[in-house]
Length: 155
Ligand SMILES: [Zn+2]
Image 1 (cartoon, helix red, strand yellow):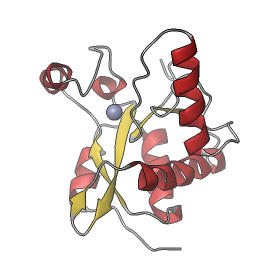
Image 2 (image 1 turned 90 degrees about the horizontal axis):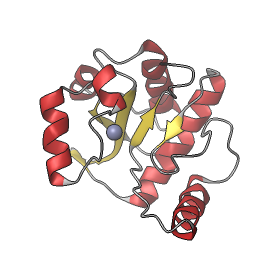
Image 3 (image 1 turned 180 degrees about the vertical axis):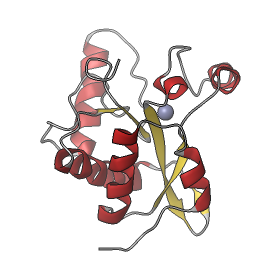
Image 4 (image 1 turned 45 degrees about the horizontal axis):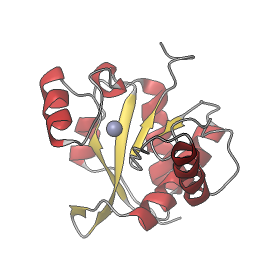
């Protein structure tokens, strides 16, 4: 175990987030081989509007607005970095945590997959998702740090 801990900013971001999702994040930081920070948990409508304006999000119906989503970003030497290889390492730990806790999870790397139940590597899930979207003539919006509780079980 790499012995990472959530910092003060991460713990602040988790305030107002659904306890089932907080439990996954807290277990994932223990399991992960890659340190991460909680970049975003609960969001206000104003924050969401700004993210849409910059293209960082596509919907006003975000699960961040209701405390059902978190963004977990790789953390290196005091800084958050949006990079895929470490994002995949974190995704692996999050999936293991979700399985242990028996909580279904949707991942922004492959939105249409039951992430907790999936068996492919996170990298393959993203590649397959992008191929499926392209085959359907649609753009693939992928958001590797994003995890959310599915609406079907958490309305
Ligand atoms: Zn997000």
